[in-house]
Length: 307
Image (cartoon, rainbow, N blue to C red; front, top):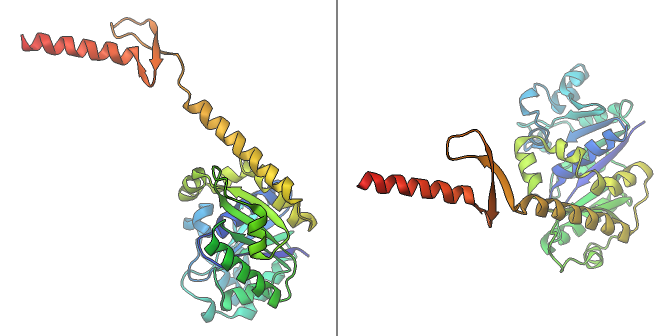
């Protein structure tokens, strides 16, 4: 049977959906059969991140009410990666929670791992999900308000006899020197770090376009490696190894950005004199001799028109 893992947080907006999608992609690329479940009934958004919002006809509510709809409700995302959407109209208070649990447990026979993107906060939804899962990934930002809510969520997990969890620090600033990993763990009263995921504007762009899995499949795979190992083996990396993985990604990203932004001394362009020869123009601070020549030619044309 497959294992059910909850991706939870105390505060909304910390990146549970992003972590769920990226982790699912990384696990599927490692050869594991993965099902992503949107557990936020009434406020689903995992379908948007995955880029399949227009492909949903049936959802988890339909499948839990009638198992004949199960295959129709599950959407194939990629090889070894499927998605079960939540209902957008019904809330956790309105659905048969026992039927939903039965549905997810039945799907354990098909998948190696089921990742449930849990709703934020404390309520019927998170209680139902915690009754299902064997362990949790607690997602938080490196901000005091998120850390305090994350600590409360850990308490809720422990109240449901879930002692096996790892922390995923999301949107960690890449230029801040004030981030102390051990201070954050002390606030959370946690021991194990699953991953440190850097803040990256590309995530916002890929998420908005519904292509987040493209980013997770390439650049983010190394950052997610500690979290993948935790899911597969149950063991977390040492804290300094997780930090080292984070620093390596940041260094590589900065180097790539500097390489793109560095101006070259000369760039090729077309001649402004109407011939077909390729001309090299000097580039100084973003202004090339080609711009200066064109401006000079335009100025000469205006002076002639004035005469």
